[in-house]
Amino acid sequence: MEERRSSHRYNLPLSVIVRPLSSLDSSVEFRVTTRDVSTGGLYFTSKQRLDIGHKLDLAVTLPPEATAGSSITIDVQGHVLRVDDAPDGASDRCGVAVVIDKLNVSRAAVDFALHRAEEAAVNRRSAATV
Image (cartoon, rainbow, N blue to C red; front, top):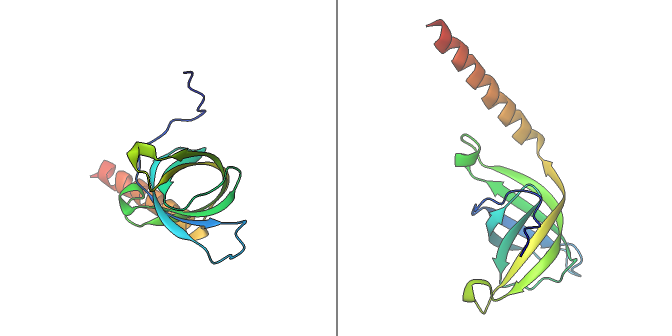
């Protein structure tokens, strides 16, 4: 079978809050952990069945280990591309492949990243002058 992915997948277990947008009850949400992620999408397993094309709001949390000290939540809008029945032999779960349509990183996350980069640059300059 030919590989059709446009970006590399990373085997990262990230915490995600999933909010289906077309649900009659907008308060419906559930938590999952990703099996893999890429810049174009993510894959998780869930007991909650979703339909192909279903639009989702996702809150993806990057752990402190990945962000140099503070967890950061990325708001993602996407849609279900594929649903796999009983992935990995788990008959009570389905696998969900989501395409990212839009993502937003909070201003606080951007400020934090810029601050950490600035600190690193200052530390490098200080180390170079010693």
